[in-house]
Structures are given as structure tokens and as C-alpha cells.
Length: 351
Image (cartoon, rainbow, N blue to C red; front, side, top):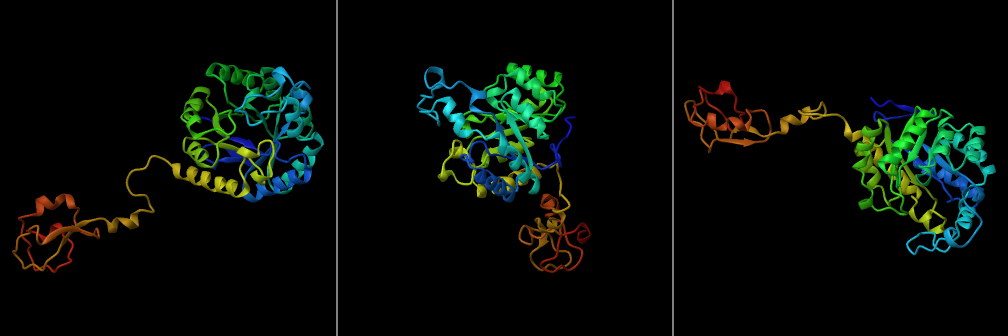
């Protein structure tokens, strides 16, 4: 049995509604005022948590704009930037973390972050974050994973690009280093991702393979993929979030706007509510509808001794008579009293 996990005031598990995370990333556009506005919009949309990313350009890469350090892939959303300049633009200043976390707390949101190196973990520990997330591109950085796992706090790990063998190494490293509350997030590391490349059938397989909760870090547009993931057992949904895609930002192109996030919160909860359990026969709510089934009725006035035929017996609504499956047994039998049109057929009506 895969246990529930508690982060802040929320229990996460298949018996609880999906845990929805709004990923701010660099969508604050280097404005603390905008970052706080994103927090407020996330709260209004009904999410459970806001997640930051904790790094600096220097902890991510080298200050070079050539060779391996320059993005020239024509299919890349960030083409034309050096890695260093991209991270300079996208990073969340570390001195902003405390006021952002404080605003989250005031609004009843859980706040945590993705660290990208050991110094970020140490910084976040000073802020007493309740959980951690490892990004897809760091899911093979075992020293980082061991550092985070050693905090003993719940850990989410995005699985983008990782083979089953790599994930096995990652999960073992986390568990051996002190992580007891692990959630793997199925992820496709393209920006945006497509539904066709999401392969959500992996979610239940991953849950059985690693015996842990599984969620989805979703880079697709819209909410359909996330809803489908919940139907397949995802307990966590993470989506990038912005105030407006039109206003730009490093991740704005594949981020949810407030009205979309509100729809995601509503529809993933409906998907979770709909799963239920294996159920045959009428539910309690359906029992009142049984009377609207078809059943056998007398459809012409009849005198005692007359024979039932296809002309005077029919399967119609409502359902107060015998089920239609008995019609062949009844044809040719006689009624033992006068019967009016509209009388339900019952066994005691017949000889």
C-alpha cells in the first residue's frame, strides 16, 4: 500500500484531491511586484502550492556565449541566448524568496522550491521549506539528490528524459539518503510538450515499478493532459503559471493563465472524484431512477380470460411492471380479471 504524504497542511495521495502546484519559474520578469501578483492570482485560482526555482546563473553554467554554452537549436524556445544570459533573465533573486514565501503563507498556499545545487539546498533549509522538487535536467545529479534527500523532507522528482535504469539509480539514491516521502512526476522535457508525446500510460506503470506516488509535471497547453493523468492515478499536477502569456517571460509561452489554472483545479478535482471504486448495480443516487426503466404494461383494456398478445402487452416506461425479459413467457397466458389500459403486468394478474 502506497502511503499518503503530508506537505504543509495537505495530505497527498489517491484518496485526496490532486495537489496542484503553480510553477512561477522566471515568469516574474525580474519584478518582485509581479512575483507577488502571481502568488495572489495562484491563490485565487485555487491551487495548493506555489513553487520557485532557486539558482543563480553562476550556479547553473559558465559565463560564455559560444560553443556548448550558446543556444542555436532552431527548435529551441530560447534560441539566440547564451545559457548564462538565459539564467540571468529567469532566476528568482534569493532575497525575494522570503517575501514570496511569506505572501504564500498569508494566502494559505504552500511554498517550496527546486534547488539546482547544494548551496541552494542550504539556503532553502534556512527558510524551512516543507518539501523539495528536483527538475528533470537534474534527475541524474545523484549528489544533489542525496543532499536534498538527507533533509528528510518530501521530495518530488521530475522524470523527463530518464530511462528506467536511471530512475532506479535516482530513487535508490534518494531512499538510501533519507527520503521516505517520494513522488515521481511524469514529465516530457519539451517546451511546450504535445499530448502525443506525453505517454501517460507510464504513470500506473511507474507507480508499480517504484512503489511510490506518481504525478505529472505538465508542459502541454490546456488542461486535457492533466485531467487524463489524474484519471490514471496522478496525485500531483504541476503547471507553469503566469499572469499573461502576451506579456512575455522566459516560460510564458507554455504557462497557464489564471482562468486556465482555475479550470485545471476544478476539472482535475472532478476527474479525481469520478474515479471512485468498482461499482455494478444502482448506486444510492440511481435508485430513484429505477422506476424510469422499461417494463411490461397492459396497453389495451382487457376482460377476464383474454389472452396476452403483442397487441395488448408492450415494454414501455415506467418500470413498475415485470422486466421486458419475461415477455415471451407471458404471451399466450390469460388474465384472471378485467384489466385497464396502463396497468403494470405482475405475476398475480395471470392464471
